[in-house]
Image 1 (cartoon, rainbow, N blue to C red):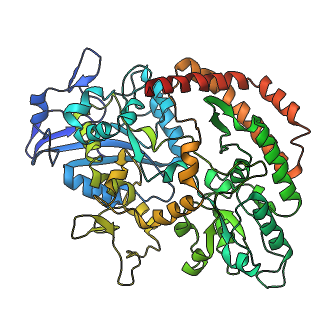
Image 2: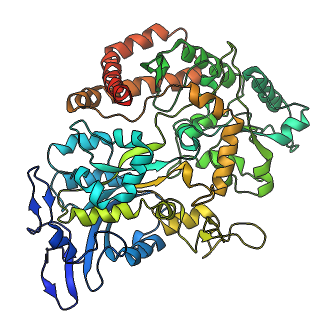
Length: 565
């Protein structure tokens, strides 16, 4: 490890060395208490615009804490890191942890037990910003955007709603966003896919109603469709507790007029609701239990998620040598159906289904296409926040956002004759896989953090980059499921800013409420009893202060709506 004591403005034989880590007295505290460096001091070692950021003959280091997906490689070895260091002249000292442990490690840092980094990446949400901002842990960037962050400023100018939603309750902006506009791809789950050869074998068309779908499942249950002499066909399989894109049953619930999701929180007619308290949800639970009791739902759907990848059990079943799964909810068929291209082509998305009361299926996640407003945070331990701001802004250049999010140039991407970034394809028209990797996803995780402060706007497609080929299949499934119809129709609860008082209410009650709901939901689907236990369920939620929780959400949501007017 390098020594992080500040060298400051000392002139060394190799030029100016700037370590922006903790300690030292470089910079001055402004009237707001934030460190601000004079233009003269900054120009001694860095360019205030253009590249490289650090002037030739000088050295500057940023210390970055990052939470990484379990699939990611060591960021020190990533092509993206080497590209960024070469382009900006900034050396990066990574403090990297898997997502499973990063949160706890960061809490210890914020409590003062460990030295703070200059930048926190992929690890802070709005609630944590509010929790720690009064302690002076995070540096507001309001004064840095105009002089040092032109790329971010351009994004905010094009999408002012994103800037508005980045403003914390104290009126400051503390972080930069993660924006991935892909024609709605990131704000709705993948559909239920059905095994088309079995539909054809049974002489059926794609179902368009919930009852037609159920009829297909009944025939699967009763027919040896894979002709192996075993009753091993699974009409419908999913992973309860496997997050929205793999839980499956939410699509059935939506056929009863409820925009349900993993958290069971949504908005209806302007009012925040717990979806599990809706009568439509109760009726859906009765319907799903009948499916389960009739052998139409794989019993493994309710087994505990396997360690590592919560999709593991589902993916094993759709990739078995003999087909056994008739229907399953998926998000990314290209990355999830890996047995063969033939098997992948055999699963087709269900269209929008009509439920027994005329309600149509559809799910809107509780987020906008700016899924985070605080993906990168500059800490108050950073003695050169201007340098950190320029580094972060580098990532908001449209091409650089592509490289950070989806993979680097001359590896995942190549530039065509018109300057558009496209996947590097081999002579057979398939992705040119390198270094022994078996998929583009593996190459992405090896070459880039696949996240961070960045913006992919719809405007970039076919002006900067092609629409990713694997995302084409994802989006095609969503389009077939009717997303263009239901997304504009459905209300949802976006990621909100809460006051410290509101967060205290949520901290005291949210987990208790969630545990009650999840316990009943799992029981109702497997054992039944939703109608009989309905009043008891509502009484337990009331005793758990559900009204206070919903009122808290509502107050924050009302403020959000006021800002949008």
